[in-house]
Image 1 (tube, chains in turn cyan, red):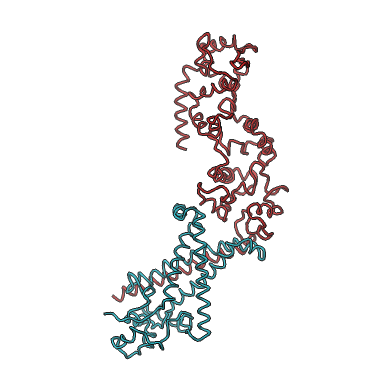
Image 2 (tube, one colour):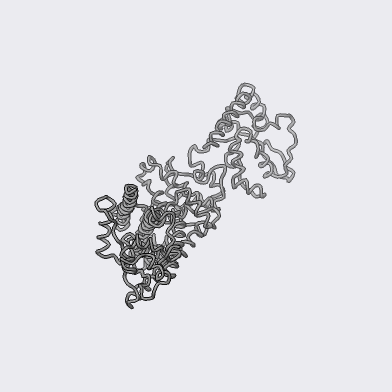
Length: 246
Length: 350
């Protein structure tokens, strides 16, 4: 039987599920509006019951995404201030070193892969890409949904600017997800076909040791054999750091 | 275009079949002279059952100079009247008499005849209303080429649609038409001549963009007047144009986004820079407020006036566009490169 370590809390799994669902809905209802001349655009719009239906779905999903982002960030800031959460997702100098090491390994200039902590630089990049990109989408989406309100206080040129930014930022997020995220979570050798950790919340110890060696060493000690650590990992002790995300 | 070609071929066939018997040879000339011996008399008339008197006079000179004058003889259109005395006419009123000629054009002008059956005027006739058919617009014994000169078209429609004709006459297109321009659209260029659709439907409303685009994307034609051909693409790139492209015919007309005519006006369209133009910057706030009640002054700047964003026009929009044009390929290229490097390493390690 494989031994597991807990990697994601219920809250985190739920957050991922909501982001995933709203992201798909936003893309399905957003891209037909960006690529309105494509034949598939008409087809997609029709599925959502016409343009008005597609826009309703887009706006409801958008509000849900915005609410989640707000909730997530406030909770993260609050927990960090109360010292309940470690800032394991904040990029630091080590990430830069890891990235260089990893690239050197890919190019054959180093013999060993970088040893990552709880989140590697790729995961941090994707997290912050989502947060910052999400904030851009929320701000520009707000301008596009309330153009009259915005124009009362700010220059009108912000509205077409928001349209360009919203549609391009959305395209960029989509492209990052279908290349980077799909590769790292599905297609990469060793992961294929599917990394279920974000849905089940647990990761096999062997994978944790391989992909997050520094975290593994911290939790179980570099000398402890996997088998010995297994018992503790089934039911993670409370003093071990709760899965943190900010 | 396929139907147009088909029509051309069938039209040519008809012309060929009919040319032989109908060419105005000596026999036909004799027939016309025979008919005119009675119908050439200005007092030629008969009494209808409802008591009114219907004239059957034909002006010989007018007919001779009409498009058919040298091509068809009387029985070509009135085959039933080849007998003498003429068979009884089964109509009771002048209107019915006029309507009885409705199908006479069909045998030669079959394509336009069938098109007219799809038109909004025939739909009115079918419901028992008064609406024009072939001869009401084209005339009968005095038929001329419909677009020579082009003003004939708007004059013809104007006999019934006088209110619209008057407004159109004052528009930028109507004024140019009066000065003899052959480039501007007249009624039928947008509304079609025979298969005239009901302009109150959503599907027709959505097609108006194409009607404007037909001329306003024609580079040679627009160059003549110093007008931009970017207007359609810049409209489509905007929120309104994109919404119109994706709007479905099932939507109610109220919900459909602003089309060309909603800002520029329709029959009353003016030069964009004329003082009374709805799209002049000074009047724009009012025009926007038609759909966006209470639109603040800044709101009009949201519309880029058919200009492509550039460092001079809408620099903010331009800059953001450039940023993503550079950043997206850079970012995605970098990520894909890393993926490829990873795969390469995995393969080498094997």
